[in-house]
Amino acid sequence: MHRTLARFRTLFVLLGMGLALTAPLHGVGAVTVAGFVLIAAGVVLIFVPGAASGREPVVLRCPVEGRWVPVNSPADKVPSHGTHELGQAYAIDLVHVPDPDREWRPLRKGLLAPRPETFPAFGRAVTAPADGVVVQAGDRQRDHWGRNTPLAFAYLLVEGLVFRPVLSLLTLSAGRFVIGNSVVLDLGDGVYALFAHLRHGSLRVRKGDRVRAGDVLAEVGNSGNTSEPHLHFHLMDRPRPLAAAGLPFAFRYESDGETHTGVPGGRRPFVPATGEPASAS
Image (cartoon, rainbow, N blue to C red; front, top):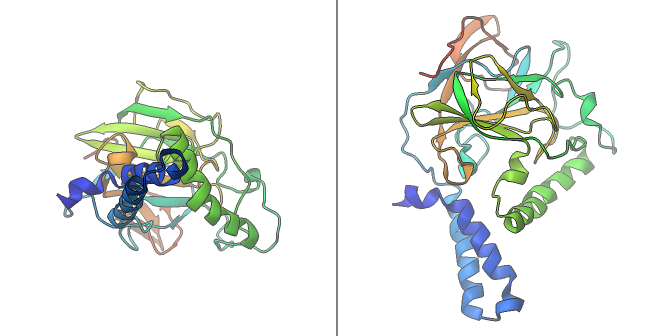
């Protein structure tokens, strides 16, 4: 029962905000209290998985090429982003760091926010990890400047906790302004792949298109709730993140001179290995 309720955690929060924030309009104290109760329930359910654990990882092809650093990886903790919300229990953030002599850091010195074009990941190709069908695609949101300086990161926290939830409430599109421009692929067998923070206007596909493993879907951007351009990728059991539960995945990659099948973690740089599977399994 609790897992089923957990799928609607975001809906509880949005509905609760709607009831609580409109108190001056309806003027009913009990309704306002109900709103706060729904918000509290939704927040608690953020930490409850929406699907049973123990499922074997879906082995895929890595959706990027080149040298990357895994951040917020399910290899380090689950849920990887601290929440089961939006089906991202096993999500991974991939930052492109092509220079082996450069160490990636989450924050850089300075006050001014850097332009997205100054980051190596911006504009990199995002490819299909398996054969599938596009069930959702959108790229109208702008690419904002980086939020990886101390002052800009502070703004990011406020934006992510206040502005974007309010926008989601007003537009009835939970997660849209967090995920940014995105693509969702139906990989079959109840598995859906989500690619987030894509570059404005970079989509190569549209809803209904069939794609093959390795086909370019879009480019890495800096849309949504991000500190710098990167690819956010995760699998889920439903096409809409609002009521989806996360699913584990794996792909072949090379790191520290060894080839692995799994999920890179520990912020250790990796490159995708050759001979990766062409379809979900």
